[in-house]
Image: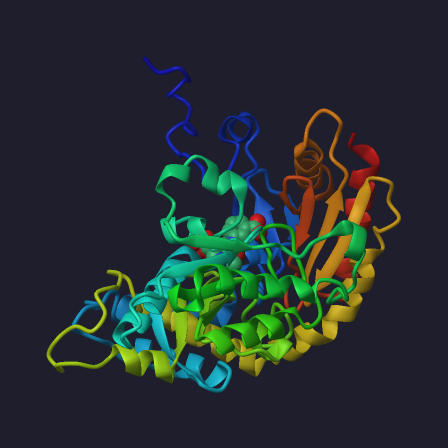
Length: 442
Ligand code: PXG
């Protein structure tokens, strides 16, 4: 017996990471997008303050990406991904290797950030095993880290609601570093907080506890995004790098959000001057147009694994859609657009304006913190006395219905991921609208 009506046209679809019952009672439907705007199903034009879902930094329906996808899908819709290839996947790998920090020069393709995270963890294990260090199996993540929703990613991730229901099946042998947000030390920080580099030393403690010969890899987002934007304290990433190097542990940067201009450079590794051994990415690799993820690795890792009898498969891992031709075409067009339009430089130049605009909310009585790095920013609200998360959701809804503005909230944290080519006036209007909403909601 169905407990809910199934004759509604909305009933069949189970929305991801969404309060389904609440949504279906008053659906927020997007029907069309172009440039910096969406159009709702009821015909309203809404400004997008989140660049899709951290995905679409160049703006929606970029004509050159649209054209590349349309051409590709009519020419080679799919190419067998195993034991066969097609030129655009190779070309994209080459382009990514050129863009990545020195020494990171091979790309393994997948379809999402979650797959990139799990692929990276498997590659780390395969690397140590190939080198005769098969005892290195422990993985270290961080509290408030997000590495997608597959079992590897939630195990090393540090988002309690994403782990809670699956606790019994999380990977064994995983530790977490402490996260770096401490409002009594670094509230209202602009850019990198001064406090917190010492928290990286927790890794040294774990090396002592387990012995580093048992530790495979550390995975962190350089600037964590979806758990509320936690800019890395000054010197923190360098300390992690040094400890990993000292103990032969691979350092994985999850740049699913950070890469492709979000922190004013092709990769956060470059912006923060710290080179990991592996970078995972997705989202901005195709401007969000076609799903794609990639794991970028050093020559040393590739060479350690890709050896042995030449006719045998070296790594038993891959996806039907690894390097999909349409995704590869979208990726190439996206990288062209970043270059031709000077996107990373434009994003970098926009940072100080964004910083000023977002911090204009610092004095609002409902705001307990504002923090930003690159073109990532969070406005943290005090929770409503009736329950955590209500105020953030009320703000999201009021922005959508009353201000024609799409704003992302994670519980009571409003998150902003402006277009890499946003107009300064649109940024100031965004925060004026958010202020009006904060004035009106409970
Ligand atoms: N790593 C990071 C750092 C991410 O931000 C993933 C992995 C997983 O990617 P896929 O493509 O499997 O979803 C992500 C995803 C938010 C939000 O509101 C962020 C993500 C997903 C959903 C919501 O900030 N990032």
